[in-house]
Length: 155
Image 1 (cartoon, helix red, strand yellow):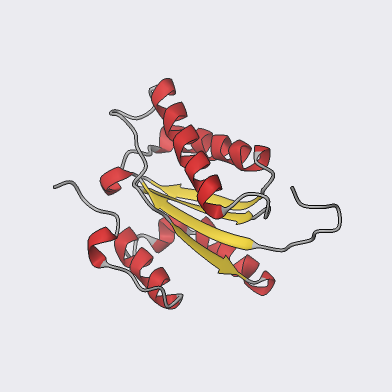
Image 2: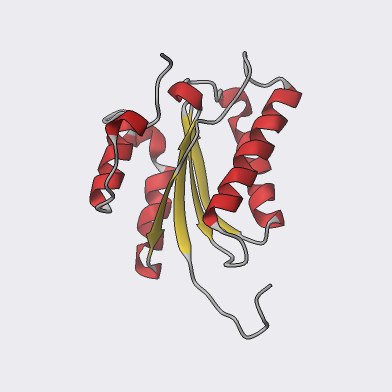
């Protein structure tokens, strides 16, 4: 637990996909999912700045509380939300998130740009696929990656 005189400003953009990049998140329940994930983030002591999804993936932009690692909060969000989706029988088949995620740090000066980017996902994906978007993010941040592990499709 951080002491009372610990201060931080950690802006993290998190991206993860539905398993096999299947388009299972339907508009009819997407808002409920975003609200559910928002409550998870807030209950874990983080600040949600932006959230949006496409049928096959989700973007989060959070003010990270340093008391919890990025890996822990993502694992918690993914396990809790997939369990909720399945209990509510929202997806037409068993819902699972893909293994792994992308996490990208941003400075305070980039907050508005990232918020707008996340808000405009529908327009953005009329021009580019999720896979191309994700590769571009990895390249923009100079993150080395192995193509075989980029959100695998079923064998």
